[in-house]
Image 1 (cartoon, helix red, strand yellow):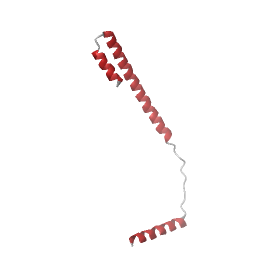
Image 2 (image 1 turned 180 degrees about the vertical axis):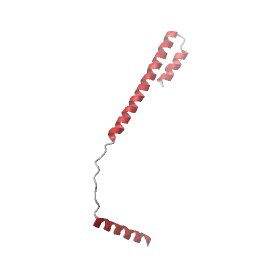
Image 3 (image 1 turned 180 degrees about the horizontal axis):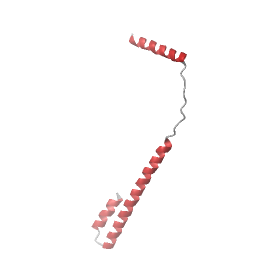
Length: 83
């Protein structure tokens, strides 16, 4: 945004010295904004990589008796809803 206004100011300035100064500032602002944008993207990517922490997967065996009881409870619930 500052680059646009400085570039416009340079176009509207009659004094060649001031015009060059405005153009120089506009270039510096553009370069700084580009560098800042790249740094922001890089930091965002780094944060995303750090946010993902793979966890150790644990295998859990199901208890057959409990699984059967859960299945039977679900069947009873379905039958009750069907009535």
